[in-house]
Every structure is written in structure tokens, then in C-alpha cells.
Image 1 (spheres, rainbow, N blue to C red):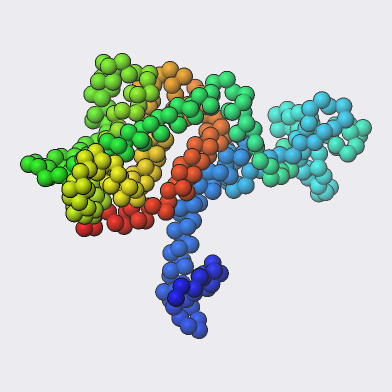
Image 2: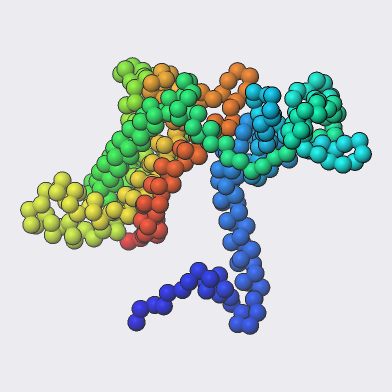
Length: 358
């Protein structure tokens, strides 16, 4: 009999105690609530902050929503004037537009009655009138108007590096895992331990030697210099080897009896059966390569070869950092990772749960 489906409201209403919530129910929902806030809170704050102006990002205390000061059109002025709520001498409040500010005094005008003339107000007697408004220019300016940020070139380079590196990583790691899991030869376990032991070597130790090798073969300022050095990963070899150990050896022996070559066994039997583990490794590889910053920054010095992560340095000036553009482009760079994860997430649980079982 098919299991009865449960709606979201029914799932959230489930509790251990029959009549009233049990202590374990309260602790469980508290744990889940806190965990959800900790996981998704920074992401929501990032997205909300990406729609704030440069001035809105430095407000204290920082608001959650992107507020902007209201601008009003006043007869006789070419540009829109900022609107303030002013406390008058009699204690009444009135919305006035600021013409200019001189020291601690501001010259204001009534937008509804500009013929009444200017009013001098102390800046302490006013507060800006704000409204929730999304600063779409944070996204549009880097894509269209800014000359020092070639978004589409950086996007093309990031896609090339990520896609090509992921394919090469899957092929090399799966071949190594196939050999270390399905072939019996002297020193196999020692080689596997040697691969895993490289995880203890900090990346900063090998940066200079690898850079010298890349420079000597002419791959500096070349996307291949970013792709090839990290093609084989000990994490990927370990993940795929442990998964391939769960594939019965009898299946491979049967294929050999039928006349299948080792390449045919690898391509037609091993890879299809290892799809869950390959999907997990693909997600990891895409995340590693797409978010990689240090190594591309070292190898690439020409603007035409920058990836998106390196290209974000264009918003870092000598005196200030254009955080509103940085946050907006950071949100854009998160979208491909989110799409890849959403497409392959069904393989994650299966791939990780079955890794290491035999």
C-alpha cells in the first residue's frame, strides 16, 4: 500500500505528545528555527544589502530593508531635492525639501508652496524622509555602464574554467579511483594513502612551486594555468574510490568474459553505476572552481583573462571600496552555484550515504 502523503502544515503540526507539545518537540523546533536562521540569515542579509545604496550601507544601526531618501521635484529647480521632516519652533512638523546645506544650517523650501521662500533650519531639527526602494542600478551599472568591469568577459572565463575543470576532474579522478578500487597490484594501498596524505599539505606551501612550473611552460595569463593544476583532487579520488568499492567485482568479471575491454568496462559499467558519487564530486568541483580566488589572482594579471571573482577587485579603489557593486555582483555569482545545486541535489544524499559501504 502506498504511503500516505503528508502536507507541510501536517508535518509542522506533528508532535511527540498526543495532547500537548512535549519538551522534545519544543527543543526540536527551537533547534530547527535557530539552524535555519544561522544558515539562511546571512544570505538574506546579503541579498537585501545588495539593493542598498552606498550611503545606505554605512547607516548605523544598519536597516534590514533597503531604504532611500525621498526625492521631490520642486518648481524652479532642475534637480530633485531631498525631502526632510522638520520640527518647527512651535513644535509642529512639516516636510521640507533641502536646497543646500551650509555648516550646521540647511536652507529648506516647502515643495507644496515654493513661493513662500527659503527657510533656514538647524540640521538637528530635521530627519530624512525615507521609503523602501530597490537600487537596481547596483546590478545594471556593472553590466552596462562601468568601463572597468567587463562582466560578460569575466562570466565567459568563469564558465570556461569551471566547466572544463569539472569535466577534467571527473575524468581523472574517476580513472584513478577505478584503478585503486578494482585492480589488485603491489603498493595500491600505499599509493592511496599517499594521495590522502596530501590533504595535510597547506595550499600556501605549494603556491610558489606550482606558479614557477606554470610560468616555465607559458601558462601564465592563460586559462589552462588555472584549470590544470587542480584537476586531480585527493578528496575526489577518495570519494569515488569508496563508492566504486560497493560495485560488485563479479559484474566486471562477467563483462570481461563477454569480451569487454577495460575501457569499455570503465565507460559503460563503472561510470553509469557511479553517477551519484560523480554528481556529488561535480557539485564540489563547481563550487571550488567557481569560487576560487587566490590561484586565479596569482596566475592571471591581464584583464581579458579575469574570472568573476578576480574581476570583483575592480571595485576596490585606493580610497574606498564600492560595496554596493561588490554585494550586487556577489549575488550574481551565487546564482550559478544555486542552479547547479538545485539540479544535482537529489544525488547528494545517495552519493554521500552510500560512500564507504561495502
